[in-house]
Amino acid sequence: MPGRIRGPQRRQSSARAHRRTSVRRVRGCRMGATTPPDHLDREQRDPATTRNVLLAKKFRQSGAVRSGRRCGVLLLAAAAVLIGSVAGIGIVATAPPDPRGVAALDRFIHQQLQWGSCDSDLLDGAGAQCTNVTVPVDYAQPQGRTMSVAISRVRATDHDHRRGILLSNPGGPGGRGLDLPVRLGRAAPSYPWELYDLIGMDPRGVGRSTPVHCGWPIGDSFQSAGADPAGFGESIATQADLAARCLAADNGTLSHITTRNTARDIDLIRALLGEDRINYFGMSYGTYLGVVYTQMFPDRTDRMVLDSAVDPARYGSDVMIQDQGAPMEEALDALADWTAARADQYRLGTTRGDVRAVVSGLIEQAARQPIRIGAYDVDEHWLPSVLFGYLHDSRRFDDAANAVRQLADAAAGQPAEPSADLEQALSGLLTATTDDAIASVESSTAVVCGDVSAPRDPAWYWRNVEASRAEQPVFGPLVNNISPCAFWPAPVEPRVDVHNAAPVLIVQATGDPVAAYQEGVGLHRTMTASRLVTLRDVIVHGAFTVPSSCVSRAVETYLRAGGLPTTDLTCHAD
Image (cartoon, rainbow, N blue to C red; front, side, top):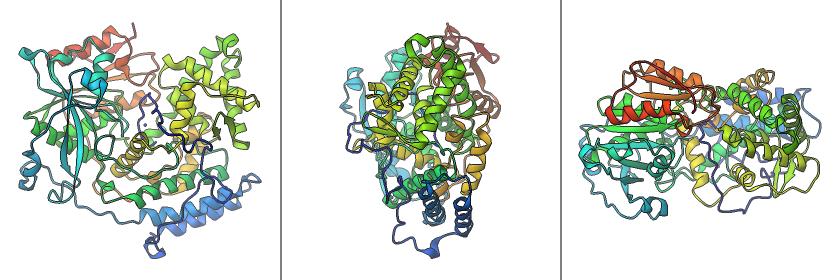
């Protein structure tokens, strides 16, 4: 979940052109705010700019700034200006109407889909076919520009009991879902997928659909605030730079890469496939997309499974991400206990405190001097992000402990080359690539920032960072940090107020470090006819991937017969 709900898998990079540094150097400082585009003159800056510049001066005068890092404070001042100037770019659109009954949408509703090969061994091997759906960029202006949404279809094999179509989304936002029907079948083979035409989808802005491309010089925006105001100034400048790049590259589509419009695309796909209703399987952010669809199109949903759910009342780049701090620290405790019990193997200490001290020491050292490992320099902004990616699933504790061991060796001055999985994690964070993987991260930013406004005042984030350190020393500065959304134009539509009685099935793990358990409880409260299946005492993001006959039985019964459990359930892993 940067301002996003993340899945457990990191992308694989296809290019290594920028591997050598963790962040681009600008005039002796780490990557900072680029010069605003020429069309962003002072008259376009909103009144908040003056306040932010004064705040920057306050940070500059702070006695907490470490010697030798004052360039970070200068970057903070530049970033504060960008809060006003970048966010002041006018991206204006009227609220799109419901596609139903809009005559101008006829050309989309009656388009002829051309199904064919997916050009994917995984999909083609499963008998899938793919096509591109033409959708309006702006549903309020359907006669205007268009974009493409790629979908796949694996037809139901039990023709006598076919239940219609089942769409799916893997999360993100920005997750590529074209091959998700096949991956779902492999992850949960006992589920009655044979009853449905399984529809995969790369949402607008992602993958084979018309993508978002911002030209980011790094692979992600999800970084820690740092140890002091100077480090925070560096982070603000980085986030301002990433936002500025997206807005400068925008060709008029960016403000329309939103959850609302993806829901509208789903409804158009439903109509094109000749179905009255959709069934749905959503994970992580995909649960939010699903419930937004139920709110926008209440008469067009059937069976919906929502795994690792998001509370729609907390969705956004701030509180939803803050909710990850406490369960992430608990997951780190569990990793520390697990690793300490195997002290001979990992050599990180014999107690939880020992292992945590190694992690904290690495972050502190990285703040003084980035840790060189292989072709990468890992500083205090990125080291917590690396750890975050390993803690989605306790089945990856061996990888996580090995990664800490490798970083500790590198920090001690030993020659260290990252393992394949650590290389993938570092590349995913620090490397710009020429493939569509980074576009998914840029699309994710566009969706979250375009869905819900974020606080703009850097002081708000810094107060939260400082307040979090006592209870969340590793991940508090990460999940409370500023994001590109602080520099984004206001959304063109209001956030979706979800509250309805759609009979959905919610599956949530108590140890989920990414979609905190209370997020699922909040969604259950909002969806008054829902049932909540709780998977207890398991650290995992993606509960359906854990062998649990109790969870499987509830989901299988619901997808096969349509009946929700009579009461909420509490399950355990087998």
